[in-house]
Amino acid sequence: MPLGVAFALLSYSLYSCGDALVKSFSGQVSVFEIGFVANLFALVPAAFAKRRGEHWRHAFRLAHPRLLHVRGLVALAGSLCITYSFTTIPLAEAYSIAFLTPLFITLLSVAVLKERVTLDRWILVGLSFVGVMIVVRPGFRELHLGHLTALIASFASAGSTTILRVVSGKEQRLSIIAMNGMYQIVGSGLLMIFSFVLLPPLDFARLACIGLFGGTAQLIIIAALKRAPASHVGPTQYVQIVWAVIFGATFYREFPDQIGVFGLVVVVIAGIMTVFSDGARTRIAGRWSEFRARRGGPKFTDAEPPEL
Image (cartoon, rainbow, N blue to C red; front, top):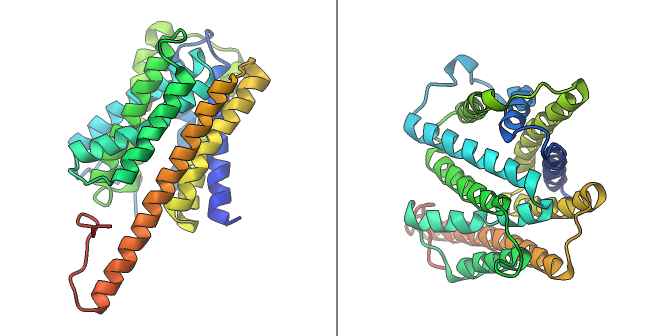
């Protein structure tokens, strides 16, 4: 197994451990307090993400301040929504809805970035949607607010990713991390004032572990992307659904039925095929560009790919 893929599997597994711990606080503490403490401790490993030549004192020198402020608000809303989902509905269902993010990214890429989307990608993201509908089965079973917040979190994640694509290469990575951390901590901190609960040391330590898991996972996924192409790293995120089923059954007595398992399988297969499809298209575009360059023809850019 390539080292980058192993790192990615470890990263997403750590995220899943943190999410399972989040669920253990269901009914005990508000999502705002969970978010505040977890994000506070997530900054500890994130401090090691600073690149050589970047300085903390320059973290808020922004090229696109409005976009990064919007991204901070959107990311905060998404984080709070998915936290609520983890504490109120089965982990596997929350993950399946959260994995609608590629569908929303595709829609936003067309509406906002004016990108062209191929038919095969529309088919695959549509298949993901069908898989989620099989898992959730609206109209055939009772839905809860947690299902809606998971959907909102999925859209928020897509919005955050779309903004990141716009500012990528124009902002310091340190600035992106700092702005997101500021909104998560300050926003959650202000919102938790009216529902704050003083936790016993052991419970506080569990909250701290959520943040440390998340911050460490972020560093590991960065390392993974340095060692393996995104098309190889992307599919590893679906290990979270496997962990969701394992953790849900082991600790929370959440057992998806056969129809639910089938829906989860559809979501995973569609997601993996989407990532590999994008990776193959990128490789073909790159080789075609090199071929045209050798022939003296025009070079294609990311914004103007060849027809495939």
